[in-house]
Image (cartoon, rainbow, N blue to C red):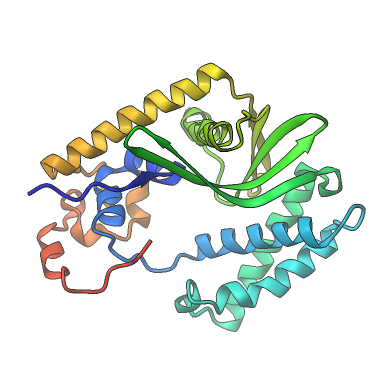
Length: 271
Ligand code: SF4
């Protein structure tokens, strides 16, 4: 029996399908709930602090201390909110969590001076139709640098190795496509600010790179539809397996998809 076809693709879904088709299926089609992740919570917190810094402070008051105050104030909203409450961090774990997040803020200030940023928008949800496919994504920050339109994406996980850098830049061109489709203007630059290292990776989108993105995403979409029709999402064992929430369902690591049947009446995660 064919599986239901997802309604849209985002940069994270594209990466998820390429990383492991079975994990993509279990997350996006079967919608199995994943336990809250402290890494995702930290990303949410740092994004929130930097967003508040941009909107609540004018230059020259976008200082490191101001950003840390915003992060500390936002910590309880994030950690005690619906999405991450189940992390149930102890006081010591919570203090370590915030301290590590402050380290990411410190690294952010090594990459740029926020007082120089002419912000146009943050956390911008954009989507555009390409044939039967809806592409959507959230742009962390859109700004002007002189006359240049710039998209900035904050990353709080590890930066990709040189081997993977090119594939992760696929997200860059995805954002460029969305800007062009929604705003009618292709960004002059897209930059990824990796706060863990810290490291800035930037790319200049072109007409060709946006067209290539459309072509590659279209091919990936065809593969997703075909996998749904054949109910054939293959596991791809690799470095992500140790963090995977779906090991009990994965034949590649000793689990079984039959367990999925037993879960059909259980609540599923709405994403
Ligand atoms: S355990 Fe590994 S191969 Fe299996 S679903 Fe998860 S990521 Fe894919």
